[in-house]
Length: 303
Ligand SMILES: Nc1ncnc2c1ncn2[C@@H]1O[C@H](COP(=O)(O)OP(=O)(O)O)[C@@H](O)[C@H]1O
Ligand SMILES: Cc1ncc(COP(=O)(O)OP(=O)(O)O)c(N)n1
Image (cartoon, rainbow, N blue to C red; front, side):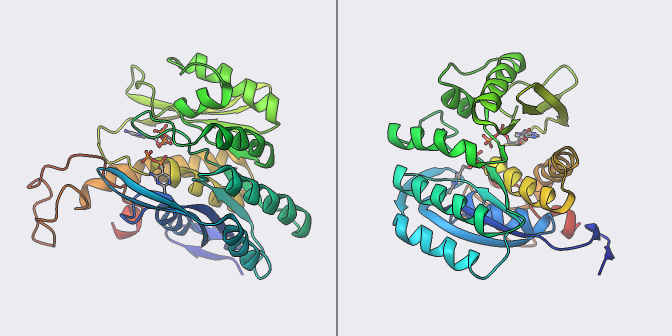
């Protein structure tokens, strides 16, 4: 039954979207961000954990991998019971986990019809610029690219995947993205969040295929420190929007518009930078919030 919903418009079916990712207990990134993003974009969210982290808006203080066999057990439990329309993949922190996820993707593509759409966010480089994966895991991620329909590297991740230097211009990033698309037979959403805004104050993301740019997407740059988890949230929104529309250009347009508003609404949250000043009477400007706060996934719903 098609119903008109004020937030999501016409919803013919609600897609089942699975996130395979790590946990951020502070709720801004990882699986917690994915569940909020999938839900806000109109999907039924499911989640299989690959790792636990200890982190907050200031940084990461610890990580613990889930055993690869148990990652697979979670995935099988979902796939045996639920038709999965789309899969978003985030933090995969060891070569063994990547191998387990790759084997699952190959099986689920054979066993479910239609096969799930796969969006891979290759989480490899921390905001600080530090490499998050060892060499063996980086090599395994490169092999995983071919299993995805769309990959969403940021500028430093694009450099690692391309075995070249960090692009300083959109042109250079576009060349790297096109080569990757050709090499791995995958679409690339090149994310421009790490490049400076253009003269009109806009950031550019580009959907790139083997023949080059398919579409450019400009979004207003928002001067906000609250960008923790933007990559996780965008890839989950893309998987969900694609499952709803079946077309990448409208899916990217919708996901981008939602993300931009969620960053714009982030100032309404009082998360991070200390435990004082919280509650309806709190002055959001009273605490100096260092670090990177979360986006407001449900800002558009809460008004
Ligand atoms: N300050 C900002 N204002 C508006 N959009 C942003 C901002 N920072 C990041 N984005 C958007 O968030 C998405 C992810 O950004 P990016 O920083 O490139 O990746 P990651 O979060 O993986 O490092 C991109 O679509 C980018 O355009
Ligand atoms: C558990 C976990 N997974 C992924 C990330 C990286 O998040 P990302 O969305 O790339 O955002 P940034 O915070 O790096 O902008 C994470 N921090 N934790």
